[in-house]
Structures are given as structure tokens and as C-alpha cells.
Length: 259
Image 1: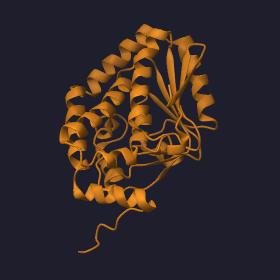
Image 2: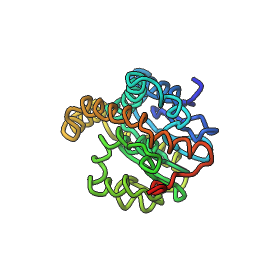
Image 3: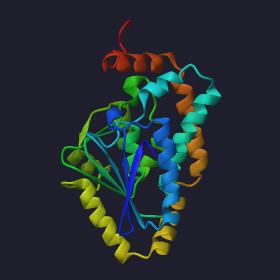
């Protein structure tokens, strides 16, 4: 694998996003490898999953260069790309193992969603969370399907349409983070190891499947609809303008300009 590092420790699989040069952005290669790895873990004897990031950040969200590159592709091509990301989130949500996100640095947009799709989110004190999609002219489409399991829709609406960074403590207050800890990855491995000892794996898998069915009925249909919204918005002139602005000089457009 070129985008991940995976190691196993007493039944715990530690999966580390390994593209620090991009802030562990969710490139097509990263998404594909991560989805395949998550699906394979139960068959490899893993009993818990810890998801972490290398370098300065956990995951800075979508790979904006790839998103911009697909802006003028056909709707079918854009939707296929969005559906690959939807499949990753579905694999993580459906994973029969206990899943723990160990967050340090930035967890932005789809990266915050990646953490929020896990059963437990542990964040270091210096971690930061933000949903900046609308500032780019984009839509937090896929993550809106499952983040209501953690945050009320009214609070998500505020975080999505009036984006502001959240500290680890603020993210814990709203429900996006479960614990703020030093050395999040080590702490997550310790907790995962304890769960492996104290919880029957078949019972965990059955419980997770039951709760997912109750909390997210029709998950596939909802993700498919969100993928369509994602694909359509990518071609909108405002999204193309926002991406170009950010990729050129790391700035967001002034959307009142010209009014």
C-alpha cells in the first residue's frame, strides 16, 4: 500500500493515513486503500480498529486538486468518484469491529466525517475540527448522512453553514469528540486492547449492526442521494471559483463581491 501504514498489536489493527505531504487528504488512492483495508480486517483476525494520521494532521478532508480536476468531467464520472467516498464511509460505519479515531492536528470536512463515522473519537488537546465546504462553494453532503448520530441536526446546520474552527474541547462539548487525551493514538490502542479482552467479538458485531439499522435505516439510499448532490455541486461555477481561489493562494472567496 502507498497511502496507508498498517500494523497489528494484540488483536488491534492500527491503520495510519500516510500521505502527510497533503495533510492526509482523501485522494482516490487513499479512499480505495482505506476501504479495502477496513473490509479485510475481520478476516485477518483483527478485533478492533484504531484509525490515525501521520505527520501534522489527522485528515484535512477532500483532496481539492482531484475535486477541481473532475469539475468539468461528466456527471457520471463525478458521481462515481463521490460514490467511492460514500463506500468508504459505509465500510467504516458497517465495520463489525470497535472503531476508534485518534485525532491530532486538523480534522477538516470529510476528515472530521471520517473520525465521526468511528465508534469512539479521541482527540489530542491541540486538535482542530472544521467544516469549511460552503466557504469553497461545496456541500458537506456525504458526512451529513451519518453525523446526526453524534450531533443534533440544528447544531450541524450551524457548523455547516457558519463554519468556524472547533478546538478539541469545543468538539467534545458538541459531541463530535468523546475524549480529549494526550497521545491520542496510544490512548486509543490501550482502550481498544481493553475492549478486545472484555467484549465478545460476535456480540459487538451484532450490537453494532443492530444500532446502525436503527439509527441509519436505508443507509445506501441516503448515501447515494448525497453522492448525487456532491457530484452536481462540483460542476457549479461557485464551487469551481472557490476551489480555484483556495488552490491558488489558500484563500476563500468573498461571496459578496460584485453585489
